[in-house]
Structure formats: structure tokens, C-alpha cells
Length: 463
Image (cartoon, rainbow, N blue to C red):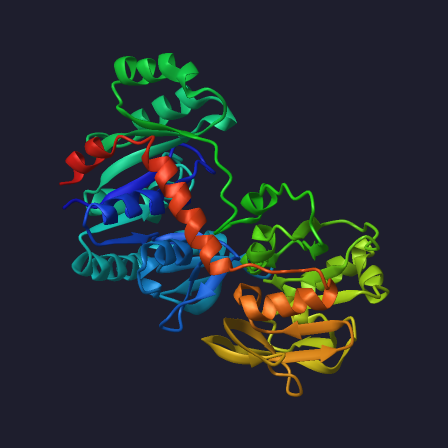
């Protein structure tokens, strides 16, 4: 069976969702499937079953496909670093902070790691569905493109193009992307999926004819725009979530600082019909909110300074209702934050925190990566840790009056804790099963997309 690459004809085409949709369809046909992305650029990551770190998109894809999570699914991850550098994570572990130009110059040194991981999966599964990155035909970067060109060329994968019609210029993006691909890769293109179509799909019948007859590219399906409020990969997709909640009971404000990370912690609240979520990125009044959440941050001291610059620092200090903080947001609650090894900053930096908690945060060189079950706030909670900051007095959690804070990500995924906590804010709150919600939404989404796809053509092309 041939492996598949998912190429977007532009960025934000829907590659991440189509990767698990195609993978799920192949699974339903009886094949074992793994999702893969050679290189990702994201502050949003999770700790795997093997204690390594990968991007949230690949973690979520593996959850949907029921595949054990490991670094093999995403061997190269870049996260925001100090200045113009990026934190380079190779095979699940932080290697160094690298200037972006230096990273691209040394890209060939990373290809062995990509090959090791891809070939490990190739031996275990019938098919690898490999997600590309951005556009595959950025001509000045094609020789540096690990996720698209390198994988598709080296492993001779079949290719599915995905085009976002919502952005406009869909014909130009399809025609241009296809004809700018190297000849070998053009010959491996199965066809194109038109994604995010709004309105009556029959209005695009002439568009299908043009693509198939004039461009000579098969159309594998026209997929309707469908909100999928799960697995948010980046801040752009996060800000585009849809809420229609007429009778919500709890109003939540999430502080959206510039390098906010692990905002998937908020997904259970976005899914909750009883909770309305608003992201706060300027100094607005916080009075209308029942709860303020400070989520994770990739550059905690930088985001803490941003709170001061915007005026939100003072607003949060004066907030008299409930505050919940996670990881980077938790660290901001302490008296001071000491980056003594310059892990986040150009030089050793000590910054005053919000001083809700009577201890100091020290950024240690060794990054804590742990996935486990924890005892938090009186509940058994499954989650994970991913942080450099350490508190000696409160290594996992802190609770006092209206403030709760923890280093543990994924805490709101736990129904028992979430229900109890929100009941303490609003007695009428009832709660729901987030696990059942996720399964239902994924199945509904996949089935909806499958009904619009030419599954027979896809299968025929890879068998």
C-alpha cells in the first residue's frame, strides 16, 4: 500500500483535519494508519506516552486514529525562542535554541531524524498519511521543505492537494501549485479536495468541470465549511472558533498574551454549552467575567511584561472573582520569576510577578516533561507537565480563596474536577462528558466529510 502526503495549495487549507479524516477513512476500510508531520512550527504541544514532546495537531490526529503517541509522529518541532531564535525539539527533546537562519542552513542535519521516524512508522502501519506545511511550492524554500517536498520525493508518496475556497483565488492556487511541483510529484497527485465551501455546493459544478477538464486534475470532493472546535493547532484557528450559547451560566475570560501556548486546555470550556469563552488581548474591563483564566505561555516573562504594558496586570491584581492559572499563567502568580540561565531572555532576567503566591519561580535548565495521573485540588486528574519553571513550596498546585493554579495541563478535560469547580462558581451548573463529546464530534465530522469525498478513487490510487 502506498503512503499519502496531504499538500495545501496555500496555508490554512485544512491539512491537519484532512489528514485525520483520510486516515480514519482508510482505517474503516481495514488498514492500519498513522498520521505524521516531519516538521511543525507551533507553541502548542503535548507530552506523549513515551515522555517526549510533539505538536498538538499530531497528538490530536493520533488520538483520533487510536495510535500510541510518540516523537515518531512529529520528529522536528520549532517553538518560539528568545529574540530571533527558536527552540528546536528533535525526536521529542529540546536540543538547543537556534537562530531561524541557522536552522535552515543546517537543515540537512535533521533529515536523518525525520527518516528514522518515518521508516519506524512505515514498518508498523499499512499507510502513513503525512501532513505537509504551508504551501509546497514556495520556490525559494523548496530545497528546505522537510514536510512537503522531502517526504513526497524521497518516499514517492501519493499526493492529495487541499485548496481553501474560502480565501478566494482557488483556481489560481490549484493550477499554480500543481504546475510548480516537480514533474515526479505532479505524476503522483491523486487529485484535489476543495475545502471550506459555504452555501449551495451545486453552484460549484462549473468549477469542478474547469478543474477536471481544463486543468486535468481530478476533484476528489467539495467539502462544506464545518466548524470543528477541537484540536486547535494555532492561535489563528483558535480565534475562529464558533460559539452559539444562548443560555450559558458561566462567563469566562481567557488572557490571550502574545506567546500563549497550550490553549487546548480551554477546549472543554469552548465545547461546554453552559460556559461562554472570550479571549482577552487588550485592557478591557474584567467585571463581566465570573472567571479569568491565565493559560500557558511559551515566553512567560515576555508575556508578563505584556500584561504590564497593556494595563491588564493591574486589572488582574484587582479582580475579586475567580482566577484559574495553568503552567506559564501559574508562574506569573508568584512573587518573582528568575530566568537565571537566560532560557527565555537574551540575558539573566528576574521579573516581579503578580505576587498572589508566596514563593519564587526559578527556571531550571532541564525541562520537565511528564504525562501522569496527579492528585490536584482533591481529585485524581490525568494530565501532563511541560515547563522549565520550578516552585519549591508549590511544585504542582496552589489554592487560596478565589485563586487556583497548577503546572498540570489538561486539567479541564477531567469531568469530575471541572464539574465540581464550575458548580462552585455557579450552583446551577450541570456539566457534561468531554470524552463523549470529542468522540461524537469526530465521528460526526469524519462521516460528513466522507460522504462528500470520492473514497473509491482515493483507495484505487493507493492500493
